[in-house]
Image 1: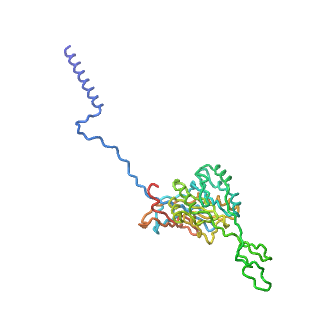
Image 2: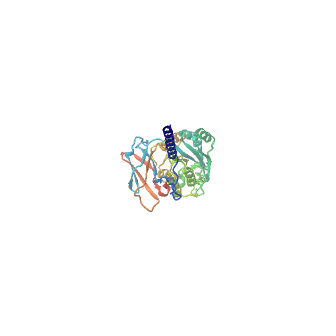
Image 3: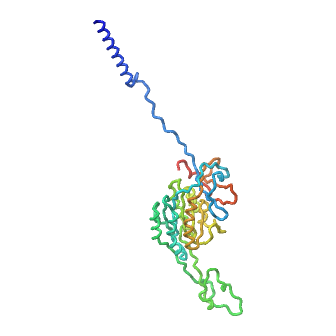
Length: 374
């Protein structure tokens, strides 16, 4: 009996010791002393270094002025400051547009009617992924509509918008003699009217009625600058364009200079696509004076283009051609390497290896405009 009791007590003590040991293992360890080191702080987030990137939209055309869309990354070379750059990314996919329709609201009365009738066709060039705003300008700018994806609302807006105009008044030239030339004498110079002059009564020797030398009241640079600022903060994953419809006039009375406005365009990655209603020329052809006017220079130096339309049908066709070209540009990017130090502006050249093609792209970039994080 004594042995059994001793064995039972020993078993109970062993069970109690095992239970105590198991409980101590389940509890968190207590600090040995008050001087124990505190737990390590949470790991710091990794440092992310953002590399400045230049976006280069490129349009390539053949000798007939038609878009070329079958090129690959290897067909392109980019040079900045005459130093070849590595193409970081390349895409030939269509991209959504962020567009500002910039409409000259002081057109010559001779062209207002066809522009007015063609306006609603502008909306046909935009799709559901495009965002569009509208500015009308003369000596001042008016934001007619802020950015919207609603194409039906854009159509309605263009239907209701009334294009402004100026009249071409006529005046008699005080330098013209009023008497008819005497028979048998050499006709004086005034008998050969200058271009555009219309004789009121050529047989009666009256003065000629000449077209007014119209002085523009539109501030083109300021209007383009305003549009570029509207587009500045739109996403870099979108093609940012100014859709300019004008007669190419500029009053010269601008707050912003051409150079300041061009810098704003390039810094904001904006391309100007212009439709001139002052000239008519077949698609794909170039005017000899292309690039001479500021409207054309904006297009040339930002990688856009200039179209010319002489009638309503041309206008409606060119509206869609403009947005198609903007949407289907190639998109190349590069991170500048070994470019010239100590200067903000850096010229860009894009070359295509395939012969017989023309390339349209931005003229350069501003280093201060591609700061990391943009």
